[in-house]
Image 1 (cartoon, helix red, strand yellow):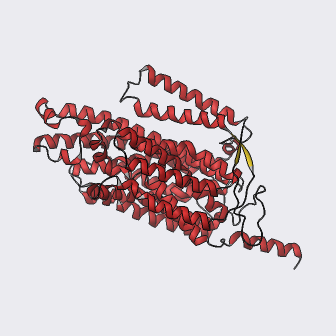
Image 2 (image 1 turned 45 degrees about the vertical axis):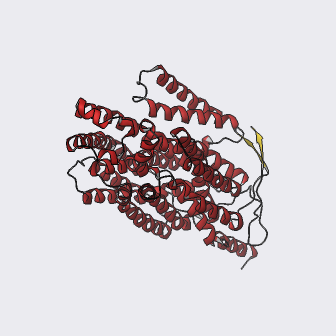
Image 3 (image 1 turned 90 degrees about the vertical axis):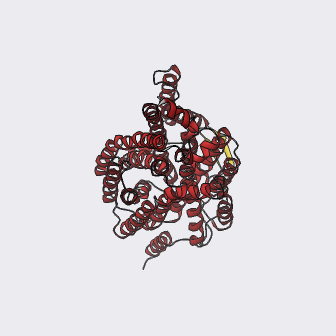
Length: 535
């Protein structure tokens, strides 16, 4: 055997073997991912009580939107900086921000303080979602990565149910503020593990950060979300403010992408868009996961509480079938992908299942049994489990290690844009339809009994006289289910895109990173840079 052959074999073994302490590191990454994704949904079941106590039903959507908006804006920054300077400090910094935001939100005395806390949480949570996935990509080659990305996807799905469940349980028990305070001990443990067990390649000592690109991107995302959130509700679509923000957002997007073609280290390099896999996978994630999943999961618990009269905890439990479906299909598909290196069939099947679930949910009325609702939720979960991490894995597989964090963050960024728009748009349409339905169904004397609709809680609704209560329940039912039907074309488009997704067999080895400093022995250097320069 020649020296060159032996060297190749040693290199191949090193790329397929997981590093030392990987189990502990993976547990910390799972915990961080759980925290970040959990807080996208944990307020959903607690939301009716929170906004009722803080007198802010008209701002209900912002408790979800603020988190997603902040997470969206910072995702590309974490991804690009991670590729350039290393991920350990970014991972730890994301945990710190997330814990600070949790403390602020838990102590909130009004809606303004709550929304600020949620935004700070989002700034940390967005980084945790990106760095967790990118660190897995640093440590495990694509084909074997499928086995580890599947549990990450299952955690993402688990949070979709555990979030509403925990939010409801805290609301019905020790108080909704614990939905935020519970993050503190778990986050502190993940931080400690990250400090002592996480060992990553050392990167460059300084980079030219794209401050102009970040500012333009933040402006573009903010204007986009505000137009979706305020248009048709707080302001008419023809209002000069909405028109002005729409124009400003469009201009900011155009200038942002132009700036990326000229920046020394762009936040979202335009070369990413040369990849058909990146483009199509990102669009599928934006439509099916971003718009579809978050819109359904964000508002279904409120529907269950108001229409069926279940408690906040019970509305969370009714979503358990979704996490069961996600965990089963995510883990099974991950093992199959590791075995044969193929992934295309899973987004196709998943999109069909998610679209079917949305169609079934759009037929719900006050006579639909909770057993049927659980069945619909299970179908939704089985579809999501086939999609969530498969798309991220396909994107990572198409890029070398020098761009894997950037590609991962860009894919998540556009998915979160969809989540932001989907949540805001569904919230706007739902609020508008609910107002119209209440005005149509409540006589003047009944409206006086109901009082301020901005402060309606499930308990208040189900303490109303029978006739008035029935009118309010029907208003909620007729306000939401048609919105689910409106989303069916979104899933049809997602299915078309899934059939067009190119399939590139999952690689057995990570591509080398030319910017990484070689490690000594079997461990990589744990040093991290601290310097940033202007662009």
